[in-house]
Length: 231
Image: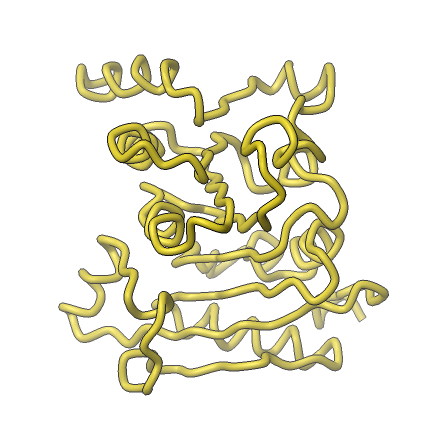
């Protein structure tokens, strides 16, 4: 492991807004902020937005800068990536941001039912050969709908046409549809945080002439979502 990575891992341990519970800790007890993020960490009642697979936290931090009346939590498994976002939060003294280093599969270990107001999925791995690992597969949709408040919005922003089409397909299969969807975001008339915040890789994709897609949708609480092959 490089000295740079070791330095970042060490600095990660000093950030009060970055949580890195071990697997053993997660098995032994519930995460101490589950259901209590507003009360015990943010110290306010502002709505919570979660970005999953947040990478360097560019979207989490960008949204937090724009919306001081909302709380933001980014989750990713890569410590060196989270270092960048965590460092920025410390430097800018942002009080409405936290990060979690853990797997997305354990999202329910960190949040209680109806604790999240919005969810962002930004440039996820499309998992070309592993449908059930896609972050908009039925497995994950059923987790999200439990943790989201009623009518909580999910945003999907991706360079992957496969991921965009798959999400449309699984929503349609479950008798649902996006509230809004566009297969070429920067050829649309949208001018808000969806287009104003760009990650490093998003800008790279744009420079290479790759279209960025975007959709948002709401999940029905009473519905159990299934993948097409499960029927």
